[in-house]
Image 1: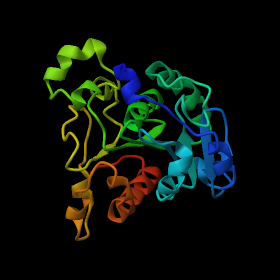
Image 2: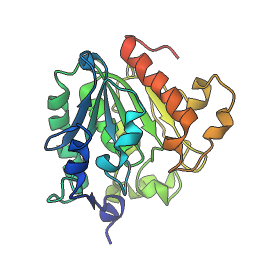
Image 3: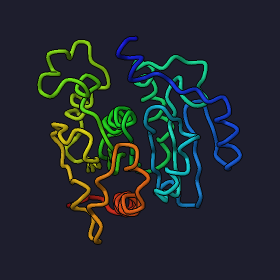
Image 4: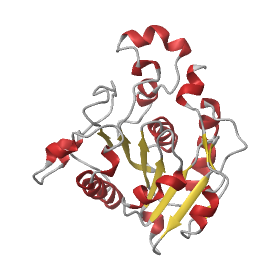
Length: 243
C-alpha cells in the first residue's frame, strides 16, 4: 500500500447527502453549508474534518463552534464524493474552488483537524490575511513521514512525502493569527514561522489540565470546545488579534 493511500484512504459515505439535507444543510459539489442568521457573511467558519470520517458524520461536532455560517469542505473520495479518487492532488485542486465559494462570505476562520490541517493550511494561504481572519489547527501533523520518522530526519525523505504542513506553514502571511491545539500524544513542534498561541494559555478557567487528551478525544472535550468558540468569535469580531 502506498504512503498516499495510507494517509488518504478515502471514506465514502453514500448516505452523506441525505444525512446533511435532513439537518437543513445545503450540499454542493465540494461543500456543505448551514447558515443560521442574517449576518452569516461576517461569521463564517470553514472546517476540514480528520481522516477515517466525513463531514456528515462529524457535523454535530463542528456545530459546537457556534458559527452563524458553517461551511464544511469535503475531500475527494470522502463523504458524498464517492466517485472520486482520494489523492493529495485532488485535495489541492479543490483550493481554488473553495476560495471562489467563500468570495462573498466576508472574513473566514479556517479550522482543520488532523488530516484536515493540510487542507486548512492551503486554504488559509490562498485566502491571505485580508480574507482569512484566523487559522485553527487541531491535532496537526508535521508531514506524513514525520509521523513515523522523527524530525528533522524526515526531511531526508521529503521527495516521497505527503501532507507537508511544515513547508506549507512557511507560506502563511505573518499577519494571519494561528492557534494550534494539540494533545500530549501528537507532535509538539511544527516549525511554523507564524504567531502561535498554545491553547493552554488561552484557557482562564480551572481544569486546563483536562485538555491532555488523546488525538481523537481532543475535539470532543467540552472545555476545549468552549474556548475554541471564544477564539473563533473573537477573530470574527476584531481586525487584529494581539495575544
